[in-house]
Image (cartoon, rainbow, N blue to C red; front, side, top):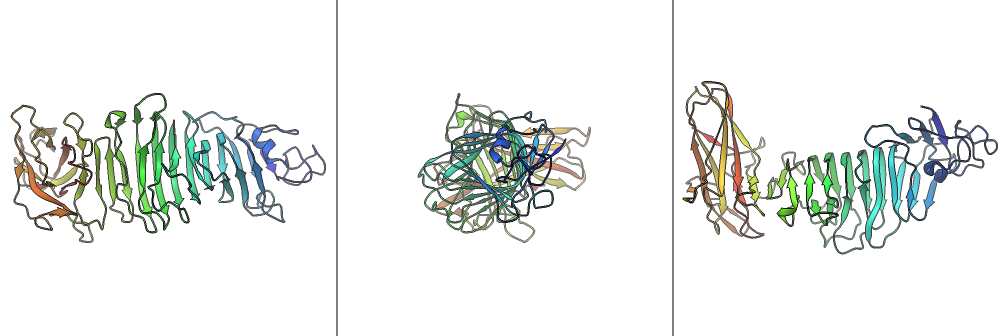
Length: 474
């Protein structure tokens, strides 16, 4: 685990063992060729997995940069996923050179295999090609505090079947010329983790299009986790977090885990259809669902599956019943069962309530407001109720679902929603309820958990349903 040094453009090419400019080629001192170091075609000295290469960002006179034409694949000395990397450390002058910013200009695809890059906010990769769209940089490894600027529609993606982890990545999307899909990060192949991710569309000419933050372009995603995502840009009117755009070797996409924890949008951005449902539900196997939390308000959330999505977005004037947020805002869940079927229902986020009274059988009631152009049956919309049996302390699960052909319309409700009668935009809603009395006594001071399932597809693209998260227990 040795320390090595690089001052790109220095007068002489040293052996990499010292932070000074070498007195002559091959003498003790810093390497002077960024390309030779990253391609591992050194004339003098060497490095190995576990070494740290300190990169000067300023030579004492000006910031440093390197321009590469054609495709470039960095030397791959690491092993995917095991954390054994060569570390590229962009220095602030403490170890080599002076404080500045190192810029890498790329006109074609850059592939970074199994490196650790500590950018210290002093390393920027600029994709200079502004024409068309497609791959920009392929990553695998660990990357901290760096910036990627794209002059055109050139996206980030993962090296096939490998993983990558960004902690502090800013993407500047300066120019978008293509008129079709907008890929911001795509083609994971393995697993991907982003922390403190900022995507800035400020100045991008995309106000008439819908950019996609994560456009999936591979058959498998082993896992995607995002902790802290900020989307900026005054010219955006809408964006989608996820959209599958094409297949590789099959027509099946498998997502093992996708979580967005903390989403912040700034500028004139609306987040309708935040997680876009799949185009064809037969292509998707998502378990568990995509979960998005945060946004313009900390209680905003989107819960998306192949069958559709469920969301709460403050300020959208959802009709509501009894539930409210801590600030008094009326609260309900919006349901969009785009591709729901009886055999593949939309599983809505569970709602729960504490049973505080003495042990007894309990009647559980869940209130819904459904597009009045539809007539839901008890075989198409149902709830599962989970509770603790007072007699044996075991969990019981009971359901309102009907499996026979003698299906009936859901029971109507007299609940008074706000507004009354409930509406959303141009859609009028009818009030329904799901009700079940437990077969056993519910243990005192235990939670009753209700899972709502919707197996009836939305009437059309403008059709929405709602349910009240304040389940009624009597």
